[in-house]
Image (cartoon, rainbow, N blue to C red; front, side, top):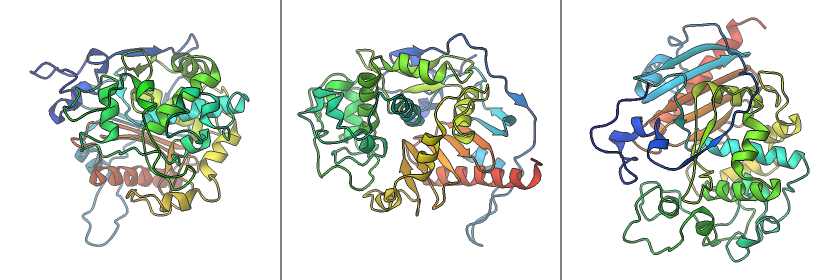
Length: 400
């Protein structure tokens, strides 16, 4: 069963309109080109259910003037399509709204970045990807672009010097021009970039400063990273992601990858998956790189590196020209760390997509949403705090 289709036809032109998001995020394959990432022939990793009422847990108030919030009130106020909490490998909450179900593929937006970052980590483990080599060693086509001199490490941590605006509400921002180049949006009259397709567009990007400086969130970094992974791994992302991750975590369904006109993945935000499979994926970052089915997906050293960062990772984050609203945090290997410590890791996507990963409490939270606006701190940070409250509650009430 799918979400009821809006009355107006859903097209490339209007699929991102506020009134259509709830439907289009659950039916991307009916609007845009997609390609499957196979789950393979492995048995589905069983999810053990242990239902608990976590909705009444109260969030810690930021100050005495803040109204009292509960997990339930946050879920109800943040356009939730579905949410799930897994603790020590057991699902405590799994809830869907309207007609979204456990088999619905939902658009992940930039949660997709963490999937691509994981592929890069595994290729690095295998000796196929040197993080400190220039990206042009893998993709010579980028030699005339601003990415000349950048390394894969710069891409993973979004510390290249490339010029790329992530202002979603500006139709002339590069993030929107990219969508137009790959056919995910109608070409605007003011768009003078003739590039067609993901790779052609990436080759037009230029640098504004030296590589290796401050963190700056830019989706193009992941798109170049995906291209580098394909070159280093010798296969398309559809095959790499399937062979290295998706076929090994016990996923229940194929991953759905949105593509451009040439079947190239929209690596920075085009993947679609079920709530349950995202929990299975998030678990590997909580469980030292090992999936629910006991398969080792990625070396624990990569997990440790991700949660630790470089000595200057937090300073680079603090120096960011953008307002990340996460003082003391960092960004590492395509994952957000919102606090000065490394207890909490986040895979985040606009319009309210999230995987919350807390290894200290063995907690994974997943929330898929359809916020009206791409970025909304008033919805994002209460959601993080709600998962924090759940993790803290479980750490103090559930015996080991």
